[in-house]
Image (cartoon, rainbow, N blue to C red; front, top):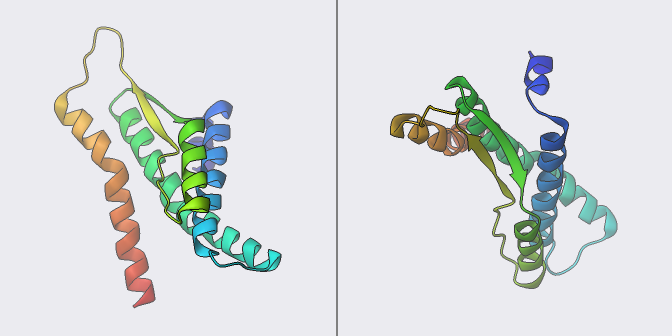
Length: 142
């Protein structure tokens, strides 16, 4: 199953996902360590950010992608280098993360217009995934 999922993610998209994932993990790490921390502390916060923020980010974007594929559309995540830079710079300078490292682009089929219902379901798939993650982790923590 995992192999089937990876086969639907082109190498360029995997690279974009990894770069965006690392970029937002760096941004969150910079916010967490405000006031200074040792190099070991930095690495600990970075790994925590990779796992937590990374899981939310990756599952959010892949939810958009695979929901679009289910409706018969081509979908691919594209990183936005400028927004990644903004996220890291704001985190470093102001202590705020504006996480918009890219977007999952949905491509229609020639002669077939995307229906509003399909667009709505594809759009809400990412946030619903994050909400489900919140519920799962809330239950685990509490």
